[in-house]
Amino acid sequence: AQSVTQLGSHVSVSEGALVLLRCNYSSSVPPYLFWYVQYPNQGLQLLLKYTTGATLVKGINGFEAEFKKSETSFHLTKPSAHMSDAAEYFCAVSEMNTGFQKLVFGTGTRLLVSP
Amino acid sequence: DTGVSQNPRHKITKRGQNVTFRCDPISEHNRLYWYRQTLGQGPEFLTYFQNEAQLEKSRLLSDRFSAERPKGSFSTLEIQRTEQGDSAMYLCASSLEQTRSPLHFGNGTRLTVT
Image (cartoon, rainbow over all chains, first blue to last red; front, side):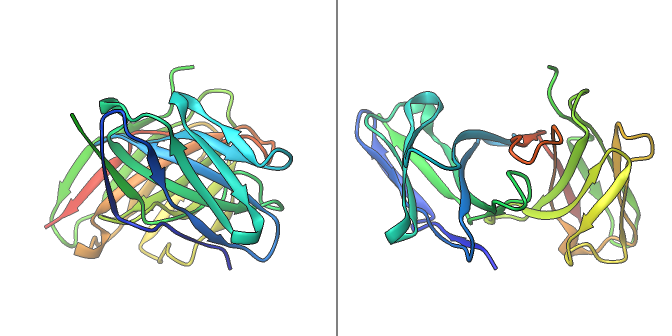
C-alpha cells in the first residue's frame, strides 16, 4: 500500500526566505508524485508533478521539487517566500498503473509567512 | 473552462438527517472523483466514475453513502442517516480519461453534523 509522510504540520518562514516542505513516500511500484496547494475554503490546485524522466520538476509560482528515489523523498522548495504563499500544501502519490487520479495524500503542511 | 462546481458550499444538518451534494465537472471531462477531507488530514479517495459508470469505491464509503452520475455529467453524493463523524469537506474532482490527465478539484462542500 502506498503512503505519504509530511514532516512538520506547520512551517514558518519570513518573507524572502527559503521554503522547504518535506515529503517522504512509500510505494511498491514506481510512483507518480504530486504537490498540491490549498488556500482557505478552497479546493486543491496542482503545483507540480513527477512522472518519469527529469528528477527536478518545476511548477507554478516558482516552486520546484526533486524526486530522490534512494531517499524516497519529494521535497518542495522555493528560493524566496512571498506572503501569498501562505497556504496548506499536500504531497500525494499514485501508482503508475492507476495514473494520476487515485491519489494518496499526506496530512499536509501549513506554511506561514511572516513579513 | 469554468472549473469544477460544487453545491452547496456549506451544509449544516442534524444527526440522522439525509444530505445530498452536487458536483458539476468540467464539461469535457468524463472522469469524476469524490474525496473526503477531515480536519487536519489530507483528502481521502471515496469513489470515481467514468461517464455514468461507478468504477471503484473505497472501503470508506459505507452503506449510508451513495454516489450517482446518471447521465455522465453532474454527480450527486448522498449521505443517509448522517453521523457526527461524517463532518468533513467533500471534494469533487474531474479529469479527462487518459490516466496521466491531472485532477481538477472543486472548492468543496463543507458538511457539519450537529
